[in-house]
Image 1 (cartoon, rainbow, N blue to C red):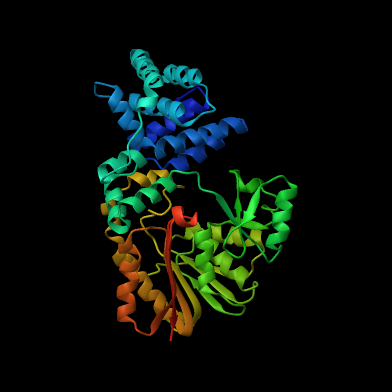
Image 2 (tube, one colour):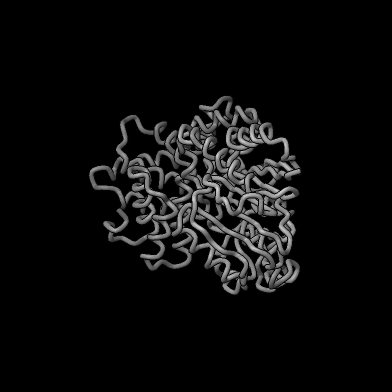
Length: 425
């Protein structure tokens, strides 16, 4: 769709990408990356395009509720995509002049519906103060207020209660901070913070020992020392998970679901780049990310292997000092970073606990006596978290929990994340 539009304005490209997302289910991150590489945009236009695409997707159900309240007719997908785009700018982007939001959106509409699109956008401009949604009282109203599929809202309410579920979903609506892990093989956290300060970049240490949280949003590849391997992007929750692994110099560490590699990198750094880390993943093509990342960071102890984490590798049974399995999951802890997951079918997640349990069982077989096993996900659904570890622990009394945490964006300012660290006694 984007290739069919001759106009290269960020709004035109955003409309094309949003229509492809709505009609074809295209992954917005992949489509956006392709558009940014294909079209030569200024930095300001690149930022606007990114904001429009992710912002409209993040607020789609809220925008639809407004549109349906203003329009007394059935709306075709192309027109709805335009109205979402226009109303999003009017409602959420204070720096965009209202006339620009309306006029440029109307210009993108087919002539036969320009009058209708113009009328709806101007009507919203006059009435927007009236569109104040009350605090949600159930999953249906929560779905509209926080723009997440009703079954997801129901699952969060069941897990956390109404008030806490609303708090978590509200936190997912805020721009997540960019969090880095400093590569202490090359530079200390204090020294890197000083380097950022000298470059005029506001940052502060976070709870993770080598973690830094940036105050503003920016392209991490443009950070001082990034290309030289002084840091890499890793959410604080993931960093705390690696800390719970407790990898030490000289040990054998297995990362069974490694890509794109941040946990393997963190373990290798904790080991002082001494020992052995085997980073495995089901897809060989993804392992290139691990290899290139390790090279950039100056890590030499990581080796990669393409394998199914459910299949036990006999020669490694009972040999590993540390094993981490960050299992495939529903991803319902990263809604703030992947807004398209807000509309994911909850039924699609129902098959995951069986797969997760198989991976955990295989992972446990590698752990030597006295070794440590960490199970983790980036979801907040209990069925994929305690629903997997509790039966495992009941069936394997030789494993004892040493740390178990559920991290949330409202309480911890991290991704929604679960990890359970266990030792084999």
